Length: 171
Length: 264
Image (tube, rainbow over all chains, first blue to last red):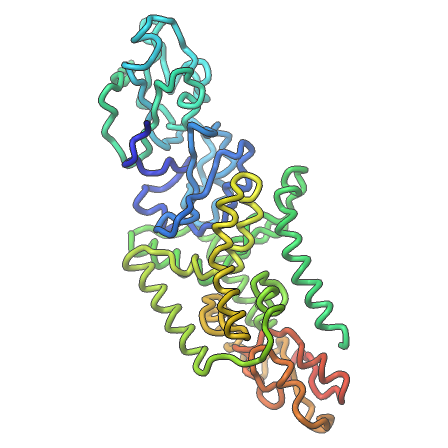
Protein backbone atom coordinates (compact mmCIF):
# COMPACT_ATOMS: atom_id res chain seq x y z
CA UNK A 1 0.00 0.00 0.00
CA UNK A 2 1.64 3.19 -1.14
CA UNK A 3 1.22 6.40 0.79
CA UNK A 4 -1.47 8.46 -0.99
CA UNK A 5 0.13 11.71 0.18
CA UNK A 6 3.36 11.15 -1.73
CA UNK A 7 4.03 13.72 -4.46
CA UNK A 8 4.75 12.30 -7.92
CA UNK A 9 8.25 10.92 -8.54
CA UNK A 10 9.66 13.22 -11.22
CA UNK A 11 12.24 12.25 -13.88
CA UNK A 12 15.93 12.98 -13.15
CA UNK A 13 16.99 16.60 -12.78
CA UNK A 14 13.53 17.95 -11.96
CA UNK A 15 13.23 21.31 -10.23
CA UNK A 16 11.51 21.49 -6.83
CA UNK A 17 8.06 19.94 -6.90
CA UNK A 18 6.18 23.18 -6.20
CA UNK A 19 7.79 24.74 -9.27
CA UNK A 20 7.75 21.75 -11.56
CA UNK A 21 4.19 22.01 -12.84
CA UNK A 22 4.67 25.68 -13.63
CA UNK A 23 7.90 25.16 -15.59
CA UNK A 24 6.82 22.08 -17.52
CA UNK A 25 5.34 22.92 -20.91
CA UNK A 26 3.83 19.42 -21.35
CA UNK A 27 5.53 18.71 -24.66
CA UNK A 28 6.12 15.02 -23.97
CA UNK A 29 9.74 15.04 -25.21
CA UNK A 30 11.04 13.31 -22.06
CA UNK A 31 8.46 10.58 -22.43
CA UNK A 32 9.26 10.21 -26.11
CA UNK A 33 13.00 9.84 -25.59
CA UNK A 34 12.81 7.46 -22.61
CA UNK A 35 14.13 4.11 -23.91
CA UNK A 36 12.57 2.18 -21.04
CA UNK A 37 9.11 3.76 -21.32
CA UNK A 38 9.51 4.67 -17.67
CA UNK A 39 8.07 8.15 -17.95
CA UNK A 40 4.31 8.54 -17.86
CA UNK A 41 2.10 11.60 -17.94
CA UNK A 42 -0.33 12.52 -15.21
CA UNK A 43 -4.00 12.48 -16.10
CA UNK A 44 -6.85 14.42 -14.55
CA UNK A 45 -7.74 18.07 -14.91
CA UNK A 46 -5.64 19.39 -12.04
CA UNK A 47 -2.44 21.42 -11.87
CA UNK A 48 -0.33 18.38 -12.71
CA UNK A 49 -2.24 17.49 -15.86
CA UNK A 50 0.14 16.04 -18.48
CA UNK A 51 3.27 16.48 -16.35
CA UNK A 52 5.74 13.56 -16.42
CA UNK A 53 6.29 11.14 -13.56
CA UNK A 54 7.83 7.73 -12.94
CA UNK A 55 5.83 4.86 -11.52
CA UNK A 56 8.66 2.85 -9.95
CA UNK A 57 6.50 -0.17 -9.21
CA UNK A 58 5.56 -0.47 -12.87
CA UNK A 59 8.75 0.67 -14.65
CA UNK A 60 11.52 2.39 -12.70
CA UNK A 61 13.96 4.98 -14.04
CA UNK A 62 17.25 3.40 -15.08
CA UNK A 63 19.17 6.68 -14.93
CA UNK A 64 20.16 6.56 -18.60
CA UNK A 65 20.13 10.39 -18.48
CA UNK A 66 18.53 10.83 -21.90
CA UNK A 67 15.59 12.95 -20.72
CA UNK A 68 17.16 15.97 -18.96
CA UNK A 69 18.88 17.37 -22.10
CA UNK A 70 15.71 17.29 -24.21
CA UNK A 71 13.59 19.32 -21.79
CA UNK A 72 13.01 22.69 -23.53
CA UNK A 73 12.14 24.70 -20.42
CA UNK A 74 14.59 23.45 -17.84
CA UNK A 75 11.87 21.78 -15.76
CA UNK A 76 14.45 19.01 -15.99
CA UNK A 77 17.96 20.40 -15.64
CA UNK A 78 19.33 20.44 -19.22
CA UNK A 79 22.93 20.39 -18.03
CA UNK A 80 22.54 17.25 -15.93
CA UNK A 81 24.41 14.33 -17.49
CA UNK A 82 25.98 12.64 -14.46
CA UNK A 83 23.80 9.93 -12.97
CA UNK A 84 25.71 10.23 -9.69
CA UNK A 85 24.23 13.71 -9.18
CA UNK A 86 20.61 12.68 -9.65
CA UNK A 87 18.25 13.15 -6.72
CA UNK A 88 14.68 12.22 -7.57
CA UNK A 89 13.82 10.98 -4.13
CA UNK A 90 15.01 8.74 -1.34
CA UNK A 91 14.53 5.00 -1.09
CA UNK A 92 13.87 3.33 2.25
CA UNK A 93 14.08 -0.34 3.19
CA UNK A 94 11.10 -1.42 5.27
CA UNK A 95 12.38 -3.45 8.20
CA UNK A 96 9.09 -5.24 8.70
CA UNK A 97 9.13 -6.65 5.17
CA UNK A 98 12.74 -7.10 4.06
CA UNK A 99 14.05 -10.69 4.00
CA UNK A 100 17.17 -9.78 5.96
CA UNK A 101 15.20 -8.39 8.91
CA UNK A 102 12.25 -10.78 9.00
CA UNK A 103 12.92 -14.36 7.98
CA UNK A 104 16.68 -14.14 7.84
CA UNK A 105 17.02 -15.01 4.18
CA UNK A 106 20.10 -13.24 2.88
CA UNK A 107 18.99 -11.08 -0.03
CA UNK A 108 20.90 -8.26 -1.67
CA UNK A 109 18.84 -7.77 -4.82
CA UNK A 110 18.49 -4.02 -4.25
CA UNK A 111 22.25 -3.68 -3.77
CA UNK A 112 23.00 -5.74 -6.87
CA UNK A 113 20.65 -3.89 -9.17
CA UNK A 114 21.24 -0.30 -8.01
CA UNK A 115 22.28 1.77 -11.11
CA UNK A 116 24.84 3.59 -8.95
CA UNK A 117 26.03 0.33 -7.44
CA UNK A 118 27.77 0.61 -4.13
CA UNK A 119 26.67 4.22 -3.70
CA UNK A 120 22.91 4.24 -3.37
CA UNK A 121 22.80 1.02 -1.44
CA UNK A 122 25.67 -0.32 0.67
CA UNK A 123 26.07 -3.63 2.45
CA UNK A 124 26.35 -2.97 6.15
CA UNK A 125 28.70 -5.43 7.88
CA UNK A 126 29.17 -6.79 4.36
CA UNK A 127 25.82 -8.53 4.59
CA UNK A 128 22.62 -6.50 5.00
CA UNK A 129 21.69 -3.83 2.47
CA UNK A 130 21.09 -0.28 3.68
CA UNK A 131 20.15 2.81 1.73
CA UNK A 132 22.41 5.85 1.81
CA UNK A 133 21.83 9.56 1.40
CA UNK A 134 23.38 9.30 -2.09
CA UNK A 135 20.42 7.26 -3.30
CA UNK A 136 19.14 8.76 -6.57
CA UNK A 137 15.54 7.73 -5.93
CA UNK A 138 15.26 6.08 -9.33
CA UNK A 139 13.12 3.26 -7.95
CA UNK A 140 14.99 0.30 -9.46
CA UNK A 141 15.21 -1.25 -5.98
CA UNK A 142 11.46 -0.82 -5.53
CA UNK A 143 10.96 -2.65 -8.82
CA UNK A 144 13.37 -5.52 -8.20
CA UNK A 145 12.62 -6.19 -4.53
CA UNK A 146 10.97 -9.62 -4.28
CA UNK A 147 8.93 -8.59 -1.25
CA UNK A 148 7.92 -4.96 -1.93
CA UNK A 149 10.14 -4.07 1.00
CA UNK A 150 11.48 -0.86 -0.56
CA UNK A 151 9.64 2.42 -1.05
CA UNK A 152 10.80 5.66 -2.63
CA UNK A 153 9.74 8.97 -1.17
CA UNK A 154 9.96 11.59 -3.91
CA UNK A 155 11.67 14.92 -3.30
CA UNK A 156 9.48 17.21 -1.28
CA UNK A 157 8.36 14.49 1.10
CA UNK A 158 11.04 14.19 3.72
CA UNK A 159 9.53 12.01 6.43
CA UNK A 160 10.69 8.38 6.21
CA UNK A 161 8.14 5.57 6.54
CA UNK A 162 7.53 4.33 10.09
CA UNK A 163 9.25 0.98 9.68
CA UNK A 164 12.18 2.32 7.63
CA UNK A 165 15.68 1.04 8.23
CA UNK A 166 17.81 4.09 9.16
CA UNK A 167 20.01 5.33 6.33
CA UNK A 168 23.56 4.03 6.38
CA UNK A 169 26.13 6.39 7.85
CA UNK A 170 28.91 6.73 5.31
CA UNK A 171 32.52 7.25 6.06
CA UNK B 1 -4.71 27.52 -57.76
CA UNK B 2 -7.74 25.30 -58.44
CA UNK B 3 -6.23 22.45 -56.46
CA UNK B 4 -5.21 24.63 -53.52
CA UNK B 5 -7.83 23.29 -51.03
CA UNK B 6 -6.82 19.72 -51.90
CA UNK B 7 -3.12 20.49 -51.52
CA UNK B 8 -3.85 22.13 -48.19
CA UNK B 9 -5.80 19.12 -46.89
CA UNK B 10 -2.97 16.83 -47.99
CA UNK B 11 -0.53 19.07 -46.11
CA UNK B 12 -2.63 19.02 -42.93
CA UNK B 13 -3.14 15.27 -43.18
CA UNK B 14 0.59 14.67 -43.69
CA UNK B 15 1.35 16.67 -40.55
CA UNK B 16 -1.12 14.55 -38.58
CA UNK B 17 0.25 11.36 -40.15
CA UNK B 18 3.79 12.44 -39.29
CA UNK B 19 2.89 12.88 -35.63
CA UNK B 20 1.11 9.52 -35.61
CA UNK B 21 4.25 7.96 -37.10
CA UNK B 22 6.63 9.58 -34.59
CA UNK B 23 6.67 6.69 -32.10
CA UNK B 24 7.44 4.27 -34.95
CA UNK B 25 10.11 6.54 -36.43
CA UNK B 26 11.68 6.85 -32.98
CA UNK B 27 11.69 3.07 -32.69
CA UNK B 28 13.84 2.74 -35.82
CA UNK B 29 16.07 5.61 -34.67
CA UNK B 30 14.88 7.90 -37.44
CA UNK B 31 13.42 10.77 -35.48
CA UNK B 32 14.12 14.02 -37.28
CA UNK B 33 11.05 15.45 -35.53
CA UNK B 34 10.85 15.28 -31.76
CA UNK B 35 8.15 16.37 -29.36
CA UNK B 36 4.63 17.61 -29.88
CA UNK B 37 3.20 20.90 -31.04
CA UNK B 38 3.73 22.24 -27.50
CA UNK B 39 7.46 22.10 -28.20
CA UNK B 40 9.00 20.65 -31.29
CA UNK B 41 12.46 19.92 -32.71
CA UNK B 42 12.72 19.67 -36.48
CA UNK B 43 16.25 18.65 -37.48
CA UNK B 44 17.43 20.27 -34.26
CA UNK B 45 15.63 23.56 -34.91
CA UNK B 46 13.39 24.30 -31.92
CA UNK B 47 9.81 25.45 -32.31
CA UNK B 48 7.42 26.06 -29.45
CA UNK B 49 3.83 26.98 -28.84
CA UNK B 50 4.10 30.71 -28.01
CA UNK B 51 1.05 30.88 -25.75
CA UNK B 52 2.13 27.89 -23.66
CA UNK B 53 5.59 29.44 -23.47
CA UNK B 54 4.11 32.69 -22.20
CA UNK B 55 2.04 30.75 -19.67
CA UNK B 56 5.10 28.84 -18.51
CA UNK B 57 7.13 32.03 -18.25
CA UNK B 58 4.38 33.75 -16.25
CA UNK B 59 3.88 30.82 -13.93
CA UNK B 60 7.59 30.29 -13.46
CA UNK B 61 8.25 33.97 -12.80
CA UNK B 62 5.50 33.92 -10.15
CA UNK B 63 7.25 31.04 -8.39
CA UNK B 64 10.67 32.61 -8.73
CA UNK B 65 12.38 30.63 -11.48
CA UNK B 66 13.13 31.31 -15.11
CA UNK B 67 12.58 28.85 -17.96
CA UNK B 68 15.53 27.80 -20.11
CA UNK B 69 16.30 29.98 -23.12
CA UNK B 70 15.55 27.22 -25.67
CA UNK B 71 11.79 27.46 -25.20
CA UNK B 72 11.91 31.20 -25.92
CA UNK B 73 13.92 30.60 -29.10
CA UNK B 74 11.27 28.10 -30.17
CA UNK B 75 8.37 30.44 -29.43
CA UNK B 76 10.21 33.27 -31.17
CA UNK B 77 10.70 31.21 -34.32
CA UNK B 78 7.00 30.31 -34.37
CA UNK B 79 6.05 33.97 -34.03
CA UNK B 80 8.57 34.95 -36.71
CA UNK B 81 6.95 32.45 -39.06
CA UNK B 82 3.55 34.01 -38.37
CA UNK B 83 5.02 37.50 -38.82
CA UNK B 84 6.24 36.79 -42.34
CA UNK B 85 3.87 34.09 -43.57
CA UNK B 86 0.74 34.95 -41.61
CA UNK B 87 -1.17 32.37 -39.63
CA UNK B 88 -0.10 29.49 -41.91
CA UNK B 89 0.12 27.33 -38.80
CA UNK B 90 -3.65 27.59 -38.30
CA UNK B 91 -4.50 26.98 -41.92
CA UNK B 92 -1.90 24.45 -43.02
CA UNK B 93 -0.45 22.64 -40.01
CA UNK B 94 -2.77 22.57 -36.98
CA UNK B 95 -4.52 19.18 -36.74
CA UNK B 96 -7.45 20.75 -34.94
CA UNK B 97 -7.78 23.17 -37.85
CA UNK B 98 -8.04 20.15 -40.14
CA UNK B 99 -10.93 18.47 -38.31
CA UNK B 100 -12.63 21.76 -37.50
CA UNK B 101 -12.36 22.81 -41.14
CA UNK B 102 -13.95 19.55 -42.22
CA UNK B 103 -17.01 19.93 -39.98
CA UNK B 104 -17.53 23.66 -40.51
CA UNK B 105 -20.57 24.29 -42.69
CA UNK B 106 -20.87 28.05 -42.77
CA UNK B 107 -18.43 30.90 -42.66
CA UNK B 108 -19.86 32.73 -39.73
CA UNK B 109 -18.06 33.57 -36.53
CA UNK B 110 -19.32 35.09 -33.32
CA UNK B 111 -19.50 38.87 -33.30
CA UNK B 112 -16.60 40.14 -31.23
CA UNK B 113 -14.90 36.73 -31.38
CA UNK B 114 -11.50 38.37 -31.40
CA UNK B 115 -12.24 40.35 -28.24
CA UNK B 116 -13.55 37.21 -26.49
CA UNK B 117 -10.46 35.18 -27.30
CA UNK B 118 -8.12 37.94 -26.15
CA UNK B 119 -10.03 38.22 -22.85
CA UNK B 120 -10.01 34.42 -22.42
CA UNK B 121 -6.28 34.41 -23.13
CA UNK B 122 -5.54 37.15 -20.60
CA UNK B 123 -7.72 35.48 -17.95
CA UNK B 124 -5.92 32.18 -18.58
CA UNK B 125 -2.53 33.89 -18.26
CA UNK B 126 -3.58 35.53 -14.99
CA UNK B 127 -4.96 32.22 -13.71
CA UNK B 128 -1.65 30.54 -14.52
CA UNK B 129 0.44 33.21 -12.80
CA UNK B 130 -1.77 33.56 -9.71
CA UNK B 131 -3.08 30.06 -9.10
CA UNK B 132 -0.65 28.02 -11.19
CA UNK B 133 -3.45 26.44 -13.16
CA UNK B 134 -2.43 25.63 -16.78
CA UNK B 135 -5.66 26.58 -18.55
CA UNK B 136 -3.81 27.44 -21.77
CA UNK B 137 -2.51 23.87 -21.93
CA UNK B 138 -6.10 22.68 -21.73
CA UNK B 139 -7.08 25.07 -24.53
CA UNK B 140 -4.09 24.21 -26.74
CA UNK B 141 -5.68 21.80 -29.17
CA UNK B 142 -2.73 21.22 -31.54
CA UNK B 143 -0.43 20.37 -28.64
CA UNK B 144 -2.86 17.98 -27.00
CA UNK B 145 -3.77 16.24 -30.23
CA UNK B 146 -0.12 15.63 -31.10
CA UNK B 147 0.60 14.31 -27.60
CA UNK B 148 -1.94 11.52 -28.04
CA UNK B 149 0.09 9.37 -30.51
CA UNK B 150 3.12 9.50 -28.18
CA UNK B 151 0.96 8.27 -25.31
CA UNK B 152 -1.08 5.75 -27.22
CA UNK B 153 1.29 2.78 -27.20
CA UNK B 154 1.89 2.97 -23.47
CA UNK B 155 -1.43 4.11 -22.06
CA UNK B 156 -4.28 4.30 -24.53
CA UNK B 157 -6.78 5.43 -21.93
CA UNK B 158 -4.67 8.48 -21.18
CA UNK B 159 -4.27 9.13 -24.92
CA UNK B 160 -8.05 9.19 -25.31
CA UNK B 161 -8.31 11.35 -22.21
CA UNK B 162 -5.89 13.87 -23.73
CA UNK B 163 -8.11 13.96 -26.80
CA UNK B 164 -11.14 14.83 -24.68
CA UNK B 165 -10.78 18.65 -24.82
CA UNK B 166 -10.34 18.70 -28.63
CA UNK B 167 -13.31 16.37 -28.90
CA UNK B 168 -15.50 18.67 -26.79
CA UNK B 169 -14.36 21.66 -28.84
CA UNK B 170 -15.26 19.79 -31.99
CA UNK B 171 -18.76 19.10 -30.66
CA UNK B 172 -19.19 22.82 -29.97
CA UNK B 173 -18.00 23.51 -33.52
CA UNK B 174 -20.51 21.01 -34.86
CA UNK B 175 -23.35 22.57 -32.88
CA UNK B 176 -22.52 26.11 -33.91
CA UNK B 177 -21.75 25.03 -37.47
CA UNK B 178 -18.65 27.17 -37.86
CA UNK B 179 -15.09 27.63 -36.65
CA UNK B 180 -16.24 28.59 -33.15
CA UNK B 181 -13.28 27.30 -31.17
CA UNK B 182 -10.57 28.59 -33.53
CA UNK B 183 -12.05 32.07 -33.74
CA UNK B 184 -13.36 32.51 -30.20
CA UNK B 185 -11.27 30.49 -27.76
CA UNK B 186 -7.97 29.37 -29.29
CA UNK B 187 -4.99 30.87 -27.43
CA UNK B 188 -2.68 30.25 -30.40
CA UNK B 189 -4.86 32.52 -32.54
CA UNK B 190 -4.19 35.42 -30.16
CA UNK B 191 -0.38 35.43 -30.36
CA UNK B 192 -0.01 34.16 -33.93
CA UNK B 193 -2.65 36.70 -34.98
CA UNK B 194 -0.78 39.46 -33.17
CA UNK B 195 2.46 38.48 -34.91
CA UNK B 196 0.73 38.40 -38.30
CA UNK B 197 -0.92 41.76 -37.62
CA UNK B 198 2.40 43.34 -36.68
CA UNK B 199 3.81 43.07 -40.22
CA UNK B 200 4.18 46.62 -41.58
CA UNK B 201 2.24 47.44 -44.74
CA UNK B 202 5.31 47.94 -46.89
CA UNK B 203 7.34 45.04 -45.56
CA UNK B 204 7.70 41.83 -47.59
CA UNK B 205 5.65 38.92 -46.31
CA UNK B 206 2.99 36.56 -47.56
CA UNK B 207 -0.49 38.01 -47.95
CA UNK B 208 -3.56 37.75 -50.13
CA UNK B 209 -3.89 40.72 -52.48
CA UNK B 210 -6.89 41.88 -54.44
CA UNK B 211 -6.67 43.20 -57.98
CA UNK B 212 -9.69 45.49 -58.33
CA UNK B 213 -9.56 45.52 -62.14
CA UNK B 214 -9.90 41.76 -62.46
CA UNK B 215 -12.77 41.48 -59.99
CA UNK B 216 -15.86 40.94 -62.10
CA UNK B 217 -18.09 38.22 -60.68
CA UNK B 218 -21.25 38.82 -58.69
CA UNK B 219 -22.30 37.49 -55.30
CA UNK B 220 -18.85 37.51 -53.71
CA UNK B 221 -18.04 33.77 -53.78
CA UNK B 222 -14.76 34.57 -52.02
CA UNK B 223 -16.61 35.79 -48.95
CA UNK B 224 -18.78 32.68 -48.95
CA UNK B 225 -15.71 30.46 -49.26
CA UNK B 226 -14.04 31.95 -46.18
CA UNK B 227 -14.68 29.81 -43.12
CA UNK B 228 -13.89 32.75 -40.87
CA UNK B 229 -16.39 35.11 -42.49
CA UNK B 230 -13.72 37.50 -43.74
CA UNK B 231 -13.92 39.80 -46.71
CA UNK B 232 -10.91 39.09 -48.91
CA UNK B 233 -11.69 41.98 -51.26
CA UNK B 234 -10.00 45.13 -50.16
CA UNK B 235 -8.14 45.13 -46.89
CA UNK B 236 -7.97 41.58 -45.57
CA UNK B 237 -7.44 41.42 -41.82
CA UNK B 238 -4.09 39.68 -41.54
CA UNK B 239 -4.60 38.74 -37.88
CA UNK B 240 -7.82 36.86 -38.65
CA UNK B 241 -6.81 35.27 -41.97
CA UNK B 242 -5.33 31.76 -41.67
CA UNK B 243 -3.87 31.85 -45.20
CA UNK B 244 -5.91 28.82 -46.21
CA UNK B 245 -6.37 30.19 -49.71
CA UNK B 246 -9.99 29.05 -50.07
CA UNK B 247 -10.91 32.49 -51.41
CA UNK B 248 -7.98 32.44 -53.86
CA UNK B 249 -9.07 29.02 -55.15
CA UNK B 250 -12.66 30.15 -55.70
CA UNK B 251 -11.52 33.36 -57.33
CA UNK B 252 -9.18 31.55 -59.71
CA UNK B 253 -12.20 30.01 -61.43
CA UNK B 254 -13.83 33.42 -61.91
CA UNK B 255 -11.41 36.18 -62.68
CA UNK B 256 -8.29 35.61 -60.61
CA UNK B 257 -8.51 38.88 -58.75
CA UNK B 258 -7.30 37.35 -55.49
CA UNK B 259 -3.74 36.08 -55.34
CA UNK B 260 -1.07 35.14 -52.85
CA UNK B 261 1.68 37.74 -53.00
CA UNK B 262 4.93 38.63 -51.29
CA UNK B 263 4.11 42.29 -50.97
CA UNK B 264 1.25 44.75 -51.40
